[in-house]
Image (cartoon, rainbow, N blue to C red; front, top):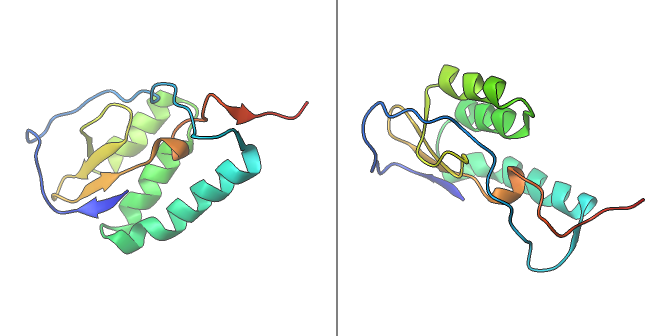
Length: 114
């Protein structure tokens, strides 16, 4: 999680985004708990560095169901994707942004109420 200014990728590399692989939370988790974790992440992420506008673009892309629209948001913001699942991205000026999987995809053990 967070942001740093080291840059370890090839300049100008563009990668098509995709959803992260299925993952499992350490224990079954409810939608409300998952939502709370996500809100806490997005509320605190800008405090770890980077530009608020980039965090906002990353959030918009992470929450978008249409991957082509999410790709457009990422590219329009000047974000370069290192990991196609958006877990590691860079702003073109060098800031590194790390996103946890829980803001990108629901876990396989999400408790669903029927």
